[in-house]
Length: 94
Image 1 (spheres, rainbow, N blue to C red):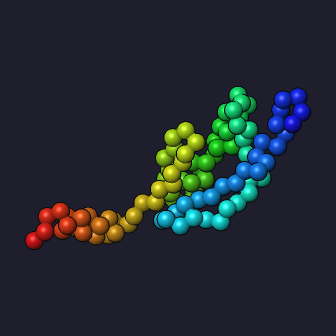
Image 2: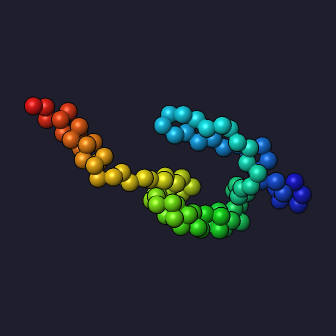
Image 3: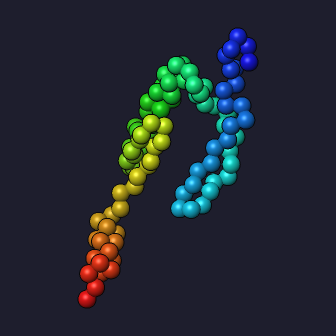
């Protein structure tokens, strides 16, 4: 650190993803946005500006709140109908 500026803002930081109750391998971050700075807010916006375009190009949709983004996949109608039928049969048997 020189002059109060952290030159390596992600040093020692890691990331892990949880999907369907399974954790991914712990990854060491090599890039990131400095925490607790005005510059950090601007860089975060620049880094994530095209995120939804990339997600949409994969045929997916997403929802984002603050720094948390959820990627959603639409199910084919038949799967949705089957799931709806199963829920209905549990809620209204017979």
